[in-house]
Structure formats: structure tokens, C-alpha cells
Length: 245
Image (cartoon, one colour):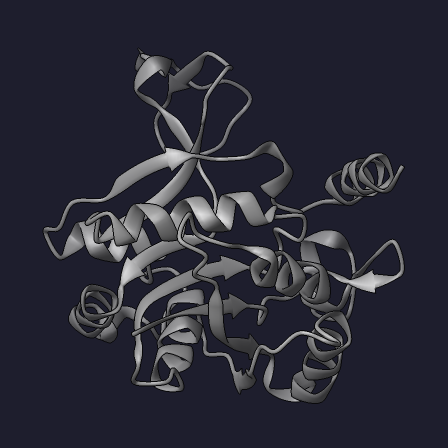
């Protein structure tokens, strides 16, 4: 049995103000998808397990560009890569990738290309937790800001409904790790919502929760931050520069 990974790279770059897919936006001259793929490939469990297959989801019109970006980052590494077209939502994209996974894979990690600087140590930590018997694992960081709950909606001012105890909160990252059977089952149970972004789950752990199964949290890593805005990209450039000395 083996570990496989899904790299979700089918999102748009609109919030970054770009016309090309976010996965192809460059960080220090290299596409985000390439950075993320290399981080996944660097992961090792405590027993030396690593990812042995990578399935990447890409926008339908950009499969070749995403394939080239990932291949360029993995030169010299023995990691088979398959690129498939993404779907109408993140959930649909992951489902498409699961269909392309090798049947030998019994553990699956799902990672977002928008988190390009994921360290191999975090990847290994997630693999270890799944192998230890936790069928669904997410990395999370403690929330440091005070959090207020308000009603849905917009306006010049909204009433505070409550202050949420932050000791109980975690900001969830990727890669998220799962036993293959559970992830397949959770996606199958929610497949009817995958076509609509407003109905689809925002992450795979939510599908597991909806299936009535327990999700576990391991320590996250600040380097696995998500890039959504130009400011996020600039911060990632600084972090990468520090790492490279």
C-alpha cells in the first residue's frame, strides 16, 4: 500500500488580479504549482514513507502549462505525475483526481497549490498521523486574534452576537490526509453538491464531518500560508528569500 497526493491547482487568479490561473502565478520566478509539488515530494514520514503518486488538477484550458510547471519542479525525482482537468468547484476537482489515483494508494493527501511553501516536515507529520490510525487529519494553527461572531450580511456596522473562545479554534491548512476508503466514501456521499461552488464543501475534511466521521488536528506550520492577495504573494517572496539565505 502507498501514499498518494492530490494537488488542487484548478483555481482562478482573479483575487490576485491576474488573468492566468493562480497555480501559474510565479513566486521567485517559479509557478506556485511547482513550489507546492516540490514541498509535497520532500515529505517523509517517521518510517520513511513518501508520496509515490501525484495527481494534479488544472483548469481545462491549461493542462499543459500546469504539467510543465510541476514537471520542472520535480526534475530528478522519481514521482509519477498525472494531470487532470478540474471541475466546477474545488470538491469536484478533488473528486476527478481521486478517480485517477492508483488503486494501491491507501492514504491520500490533498493539498492546495495556493500554499506553495508547505514544508516537507508538515507533509510527513500528516502521513504519520493517518498511519497512526487517525483516518482524517488536518493541520491547524492556533488563532491569536479575538474572534467575534456577527450575523451574515454587509453594512456599515454589524452587531456582535458573541465572542468565540479562541482556545478552541484552529485555522486549518493543507495538506489534509485521509484513509483512501473514507475520502472516497465522503466524496460519494456529497457528490450531488459538487457541481455548485455555493453548495460544495470548502475542504475535504468538511465532507468527512458531514459523513459523521471524526477529523483530527495536528500542528500546522506558518510556512504553509495560503496565497490569496498580492500582499500574501509579497510575504511569501520574503519568506522564500529568508529560507534561501
